[in-house]
Length: 222
DNA sequence: GGTACGATTGTCT
DNA sequence: GACAATCGTACCT
Image 1: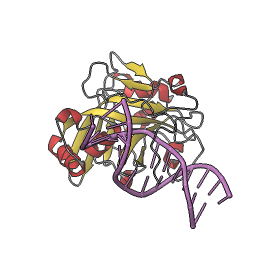
Image 2 (image 1 turned 135 degrees about the vertical axis):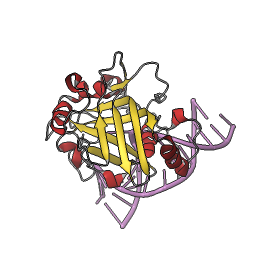
Image 3 (image 1 turned 90 degrees about the vertical axis):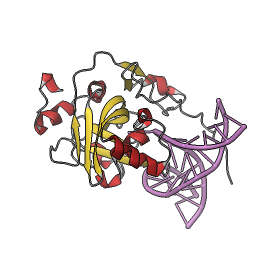
């Protein structure tokens, strides 16, 4: 929460808070809340794991090869939602950070559902099997699914108090752990040059680490 | 117009 | 631990 603000931070303050360096913002988002208000219900997730993507200089970022239709929102002002489709089936959600013109964003990797368990469970059931509430938002595609984030919500303003998706930062987390980003290999195994995954140590609502598959490891089909 | 591949997940061994 | 599902995007000719 910006400077110990009691929780009624206005949109402008939140936007300014998010407009800082992505490596500063990302760990401070841990413990924060994301709430979606959609036709089928309201769900709130408390963030336990995120990753920073620094834009055009960052080989792991979707913005590395410049602006495109898909990543355009990342180049805009902070506080907007970047959603993309992955592997044909899944969605992943990011919070745009940094100054206008710089394509930085924070990938929301995992969280704990703290409101709207039934709604989140129903959404997950449409996709596959829900085992426990621990798993509802553990993993970026699961989190996006539980919150109902999809391409229709591309670019929405997370700082708008009356919008469908709202972000409310929490207290500065007491302890944050850092490590390489999941699934990001980088040229020549450079993944560890960018230890930009942040999570709350000991929290069960954190996804399991999976290294990026080695290049060419995927079986060829014909 | 063609193709390789992914900021993932679930299932099977 | 390994692999298929599944399709948009990026990059090539």
